[in-house]
Image (cartoon, rainbow, N blue to C red; front, side, top):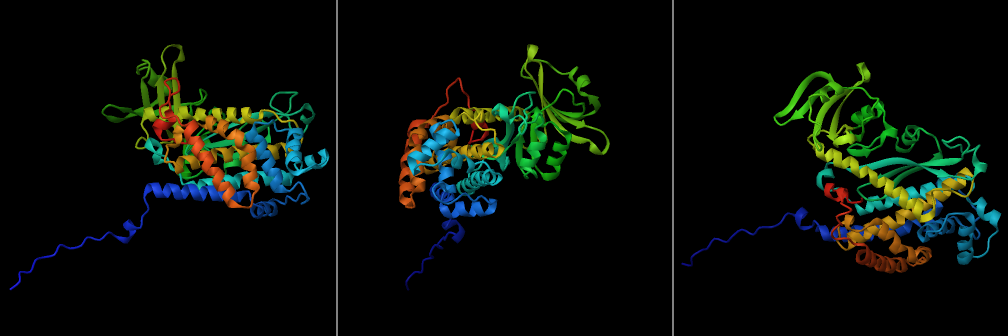
Length: 456
């Protein structure tokens, strides 16, 4: 008789695993989708949709809404000062002659400001949705990390009545900007009359806090109700401690674990701590009394000498970030200041050459849209070539793309999608070749990269 041998069972992969695309394939797919969807934002169909939403209805002859948007984007990428004369000259060179008054009136309406803001927000939402970038490293415990801040913009003196600045006798507006350290995109923005208080403008911009999102704010946003709102929403806030705030120390972290304290004042607690440079204190504090009191985490670090102590108030639990990581995380809030510098240097956005409020908003949102296009190409290049996003220097990307500004607008105006795809191939290859920094210099350490904030 023939001996029967036992056959080894065939191991079959589960359908879910076999069909799951690799990381590299998924990155390429995301880059292609983001590339196509970004170009789609600049199509007549989407522009007409935004016009219908905002009520923007310029005479659809020569200065169409799509052409006006692309001219402002081109002006920003070229580094042109966004005054009507320079924008009109570019429009004249590309589309033909138009009277000065007719050109300016296309921007001087509430609907124009709403339309340009809607185009900016649509582009941001599109890129964020299709690139699917995630945080890494210690900050991967958050869905996003955002830094918010405000900056002023000067306007001509004739705008004093409509746009009074913080300083008496001057005129100006203020932007409130939200910068995502995950994508490196300017994701939120609001332009309005310049005031000393930033909190009311920030509440109008952000609305409800997002769950599991970390907000990095400076002392201009210091408010007890903000921390309480973050705790209720499941969000997190990190900012410096204001010297006028009176907090009570309830406990502190030691080498042996967490130890409770009999409600000491912060001043009394510091008497028994070391003032040696680099010493870090991790405490639980109560701020306020009664129903309005909030229990928060306070991290203090000694800078030594005259610099003294620096304190950071946050809702981040110890299980997520250590005290040293909290201090480092707040340091990357400074990246939003670099963003302001980039915007103001690119197109002289620190001042505006019109006193019309709606025109100021329209031109500013148009410039921000141009910034989103540049940063989006940086994202696409990182995904397409499997390069860490933090290695592509933002300023170098802006400088590389600047000579291609006119060609980019040509491709977006071309209904043939192949022109845009071929151009993106050239741009992404060049971004990786000319802007990649494999190893940061000793004079410019990458704190954001070490924490996993890739966009910074």
